[in-house]
Length: 81
Image 1 (cartoon, rainbow, N blue to C red):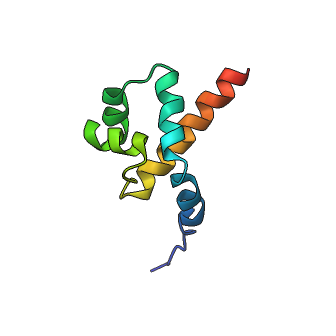
Image 2: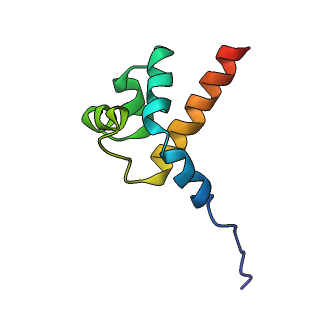
Image 3: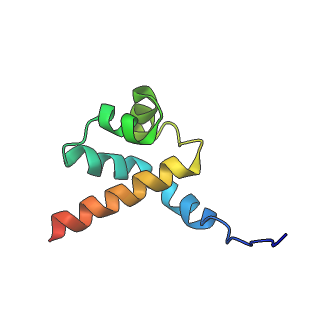
């Protein structure tokens, strides 16, 4: 049996991006994305997004924070074009 080694997920990068979640969510909301749409794409409930946006709570799963950061970055890039 052959063992396949996969690189670890970019945890350090994800942790760094999670710190900017409130601003990332505000960027997405200014672009017209609703809390309901965020919840549908990312998973957590609308109350969680309210808390993330206010900076009261951080996502428990890094993938949620990373996804929000990537999405917000794309929105920023499109708005600069």
